[in-house]
Every structure is written in C-alpha cells, then in structure tokens.
Length: 636
Image (cartoon, rainbow, N blue to C red; front, side):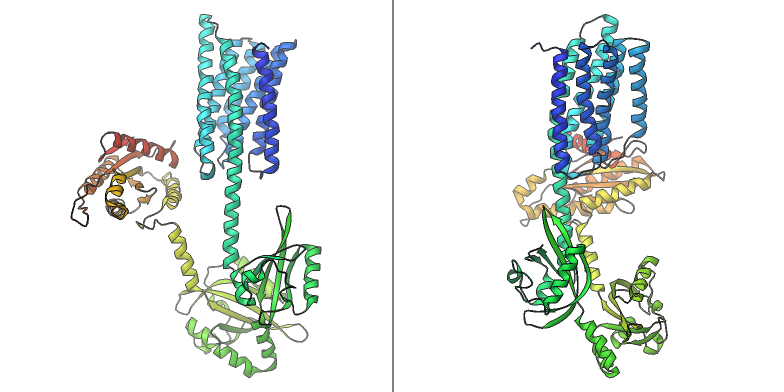
C-alpha cells in the first residue's frame, strides 16, 4: 500500500467511523450530559470529511467533493467547540463562531468555484481551523468542574499544537504561492496524522471525562440522600420489591420501633411482626403495585415491645441498577390521634394534657380565631392568655414566608389533611423563632372540620447549629478566614459587582517562603503557627471590602480594592516587610526567619476572569520566587 493522501484519507475515515461507534456506546451507558449530541455530530462530520476527501480521487466532481469535505471537517471542529462549551457548563461563543463560520463558507466557496485558487482556499481553511482549535483549548482550560480537570487540560494541551500547526500550514502555503516552494504534500500528510492522533487522544480523554463526571454526580447524589435519610425526623426504611426484605433503616426507625439495624436488615416487616393487621400490609402493597406510590395511609404498627403505634405511611418505588426498591416513610401520629380522641371525650382531659405539655399548642376555630393557647406557648412567645384569645395567628407572622407557603398550608388543612413544616414565627418582642409545626384539622362525627390544632416545637437551637455547620464548611479551620471554595465563590461574585463600578481591583497570590523547611525542621505545630501569624498580618492590611482566603497549605489569595494602583502595590510591599519583622521563636527561643512572596496582578474589565487573574498572579508569584523570594512581583 502506498502511503499517499487517498490512503491516509481512507484510514482517517475508518478511524473516525470507529470513533463514532465508540461515542454511541459511551452515550448509551452514561448519563446524557448537555452538549454530547454536538460531540457525536462532530464525530460523524469528521468521518464523512475523510470519506468524501478520499472519494474525490475517483470522481469527476473533485472540486465539489473537496468543498463538501472541508465543510464537514469544519462542522466537526465547530461541533466540538459547542459540545465542549455545553458539557463544561460554559456559554457558547455564538458571535465568534458565527463570524468564523461566515468567513469560512465565504472564503471556501469563493476560492473553490469563483476565483479558483487552491492555495488561498487552504489558507482560509487553515487559519479558521487554527482559531477554532485555540477557542477549544480556551474552553477546556476555563471551566470550573474540578472532577474532570486533568482530562480537559490534556485535550487543551493537544488543541494548542494542533491549532498552531494549521496556522503554520497557512503561512507556508502563502509562502509557496509566492515562491513556488513545493511543501504542500508534507503538510497534507502531517495534517491527517495529527487529526488521527487527536481523535485517538480526545476519544480516550472524553471517555475519562464522562466517567469521572458521572461518578462525581452519583457521589454527590448519594451524599445528599444519605444526609436526608439520616436527619429526617420520621421513620424511614428501604426494602426490596417485591420480596419486602429490608436493606437499610435510619436512626429514627431504631428509636421508634425498638429494633436495631442488625435485627432488621434482611428481614421483612412480616418477619418482625410489624403490622398489627396484616390487612394493612396487603392494602399497602396493592397500592404500591398499582400506582408505584402511596401517600399517608393510616396504619397501626407494633414495636419490638409489642406497643401499638398509630402511624401514617408514605412510600414510593425507585429503580436502582435494574432492581426495584421501596422507600417507606412512617410518621408516628399516636400522640395527635390520642389527643383528638381525648378532646372529644373530655375538656378536662384536654386541659390537663395541654397545660402540662412541653410542646406549644394553639386551638383555633374555623374562622382562624385563637380559642386556646397552652402555658408553654405563652411563655415561649411572651404573651398573656388574654392578649391572644380571639386573635388570628397572623400576630405570629414574621414575613419570612411567601404567599405560596400559606396557600399550601390552608389548602391542605381545609381539605381535612394534616399539614406539617418548619416555620419562622415572631415573638411579642419582635424576636424570630424557628418552630416545627403540625396543623391538624379536628373533625366532628360527620367528618366536618370544627377546629384546628397547632402543635409547635421550638427548633431554633437546631437551626442555629445547622447554620454554624454551614459557616464551618466555608471557613478554614486553622486560620478562621475563608477556605478555597468560599473564597472562589465570593471572589467570582465580587468581580461581577466590580464591573458596575469604577474601582481598581488587584489579585494577590501570597506564599510562605520555604514553608516545608519550617515544617521539617521545627514540626507541624510551628508550621501552623507560621500560617496563623501570616494570616494575622494579612488581615491587618487586607480588610474592608477586600477578600482574603487560604487556598492551599501555605498559600493565600486576596482581592484588594482601591482607586490607585500604586497604593495597592505599596500595600503588598508593606505586607512583605511586616511578615519579615515578625518575632517568630521556637520554645527554646530560637528565632525562625519568616518571609513571604507575593504575586500581584490587576483586573482588566473587558478581558479578565477569576481564572485568568489567578493564572497571572501565579506567574507573578513564580517570578518573585525566582528573584530570591521575600519580595513582590507585579504583572500589570
């Protein structure tokens, strides 16, 4: 076989076709992410391009086939750009791509059919292909999906020489046109070899990208499910369908039923004698089999100690890896049901329960007027009984919830159903309080609503703990400043706000010099002290509207705002000097030298992103390190 252009074209077609089959297989087994259809379109276009180019050597319409082949090849790289943008959650550069497309079609058509000039056609083809390749590299470098970053950087690294090659080919073709220097065949062969190598490389990387993203998404979903599963106050268990074998339970289940997790796993609710009436179980499974979901079915269950509990069970089937499971949620309504019965029997019993309960209770009529409030409610909210009797519960309204919240509340209880949620109420003194509320319609013998019972539990401490946990998740535990994730998110928002003002903004990349030596020589405790000392000095100068975060072991980043670039640079210089002057001693009073290097760069409104700022400040920091450390380096 002669290794000429037609042969290489056929090889390119076969490899591209296999590429299409691989992509179809990948798309079949992996979640369909945005942009994957464009990437598949790119594969098909690439394959057709190679086939048509080879076909032109056996056809009388060679010029037309070359034109169509070039169009498909352009579609292949254009599809990659759009596909990667969507897959990486980046905006598609519509204006740039539209301009390049118009130039490509106009130039390709003009130099193919009107002013037939092969060299100029190749120049247009190569220049536009090189530009789109560079755009692809930019997309692959500028995304924020950490789980696939190694693979995208590898493809981006391949796009740059690929695009550079086409630019060089355009220049040599222009040179050949004027000097009549025969170099086109070499470039044709190299372009095909590079295209084949690129296909193989990005096919491998794209499979890795999709698998890594699929895995990251599944892990996140599993973490969210596990958090909800473990923290929900209701009893939850997961069972196989249709065998009914329990495969997982939450902590509330063990508390309510008395069965441990080990006693329950692998057993069915029949094995545990869970149902007081097996007819309830049969009714439950008939609903599940017919509708796949069951909502608020009233049942009676038995605990391990054979205690009866009145409960509402809701369940739904779910499919996981070709197996069907039932997620069941059971809410204990024994207390509410018992209260309702006692209220019907005796006002005295009602009073005794309400007066002694640690929960807050409000009883209202159908017009919404408060008829009773127990002492716990009055003490918690700061009211006297006479201040609330005859009033509407709107006196507790905090303004925290929207109309839809109250619409759902009233539409539920007016239909005779129980409604529960977390609600923010307002005390008499204006303080806000988080409460877990259960609103129960009280029905007479005819099933008509005669009253509403509100059961409220103060959960303010729990909500405060949740808020503290959220703060901890965004704070560096050693220094107390923002961690990397929090800094990146806040800095991104701050840059968007800056675009609407005229302030100058700089990005500092701060690194402790020879930090590893401090750790290795004096121990990690001294290393932590060094980090804390540097943080304190940074906070003295970087404050107000400025942002400061610890983004690595001994690395800090800052956004610094001012109206004068020289003052910002001076601030970095002062910071270096102050750290150098710190009194940093070991327990044996041995002074440890402490220095930092700072890379400084300034934000350019029209062209910069947070990522480009960080890259440029990293370069400046590298320059400061190379220049001897303990200094700043500025890139304007």
